[in-house]
Amino acid sequence: MRRHTSVALAATVLAAGLTPLMLSGPASAAVAKQYDDFNGDGYRDLAYSNAYTGISGPGGWRGGAVTVVYGTARGLDTSRTQVVHQDSPGVPGAGEDDDMFGDSLASADLNKDGYADLVVGNQTEHVGSAKYRGKVTIVWGSRSGLSGGTTLAPKSGAGGSQAHFGADLATGDFTGDGSPDLAVVGGSEAWLYRGPFTKSGRTGTVSKIDKEGAGWYSHRLAAGKVNRDGKTDLVILGEQSYGSEVRMRAWFLKGSSSGLASGASKTLADRWRGGLGPNAVIGDFDKDGYGDIAIGQPDRDRGKGAVTIWRGTSSGPSGSKTFTQATAGVSGTPEAGDNFGYAVSAADTNGDGYADLAVGVPHEDVSGRRDQGGVHLFRGGSGGLTGTRSSWIPQTVAGPAVADAGFGYAVRLRDLDRDGKADLTVGMSDKALLLRGTSSGLAPSPARELPEFGGGFVD
Image (tube, rainbow, N blue to C red; front, side, top):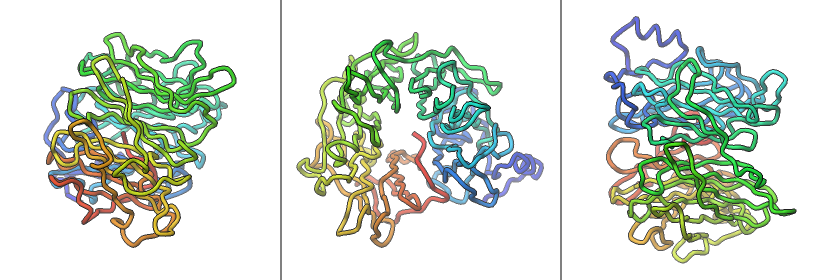
């Protein structure tokens, strides 16, 4: 751990219950350039969920935590970590065994002070007599890293018993006014909190995003730029009732100055009977300037799984293509329960300007080893993604082959050392690994282990 030159400042940081970090230069008053740079030094930091329940770590925290590993010019520095939980001084609430603090994560510079802030969902938090009402906490970025927090107030309809407020989160400038906004799932609805945000809890106006009278229930969110108008767009994954049938659908909402405008919808499953549910990410896989929506469908075809690419255009998403492990050029064979598409993430791993797609398959059986798992990397290029430009990243990059490793249940592609090439972080049953991006793609060796992992990565 690096030492501070100021003893007084180090004492202040320690008193706040946070790990002291090497200070960066002062950030400007403008919005942070990186939505995940919590200390304003110009390098992305990585936040991910820690164990959800019980007691863990020397502080004896309960009910979940978030680990933050801070970035440098050499990439993530695993000696510069911080664990944030509800028993951290300055963070509202108290950790309890039934909590899931960190179950959902997002980040952005919500108060526009030049430091990214961490948004933490805790969908099983009990609040008064409202069981499983859920809670969303903003943990504020600063020159010394994350420090202190503010609770986001739910609107009526988003914060009753069993509402699970904070079940999913997404950030972006949906209105194009220069202030990051926040979308939250609560009460099976999506809610748009307009920025800017303040540490006292004040936000811009809040509105419900719903297909009124259409039997719509929101589950998951994905944010990104699809139609090249400069505003962030939103994709909501949810279920919709059609008589006695329930369909799983994706709903595109276009960013606009007045909020989010309803756009195209796409049916993912005609008869939805529950399961893992889909997840999505947005990336420009064919470098045409429009963001394509990659939707992981791990339940499809008895759990064999699939990923559908809903192509971006100037008017929103239109046309699609679906990949499975039966697609020509894709390694492996589709089997029931593989859950291809359990997790997806997009970014450019080799610096060629095309976004690539990482697809987790955590329940893939390999050489007789149950649920060993693995990750498919689909490289972007002219015409978009193809099976012939895909490669297989096996669990053995983490060490000896083992059963029940669940390699690929969480994936995230981001450039963590500012070299123009995205690095891959992969979660498995007992740890997470970092694979570095290079001009020839991801380097399988050496893989670096990340500390205190127990959940998913920040979006």
